[in-house]
Length: 101
Image 1: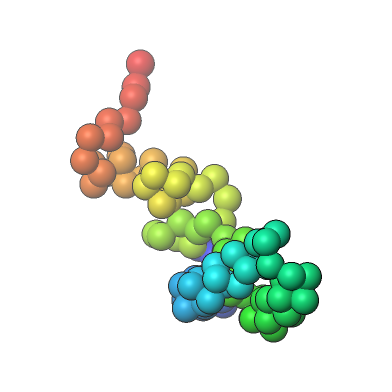
Image 2: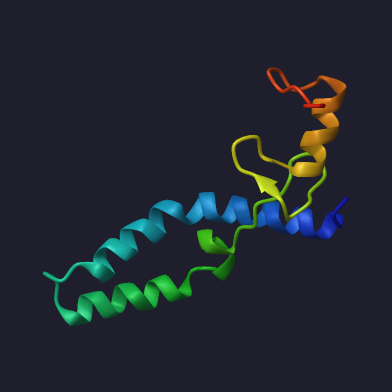
């Protein structure tokens, strides 16, 4: 199980990403628009840099929903391989059968 502080920090980042997504998208569109003047693009970049760093989507970490484990993450099921195997062995994931031979 991951540290509670790491899990909460990532949840806070996800909340900030969601909150600032629209503003960040508009500013990026202005900053990357070549038809606008350099001053307008530069002011958009300055406003973009004033946004909180944790509102950037690249700072999010994929974590297991069950244990909070950051590695060996399955994106489709949003859990780690260890939690996936345990729940699959117990028969709690529909359609998943643990193989044996």
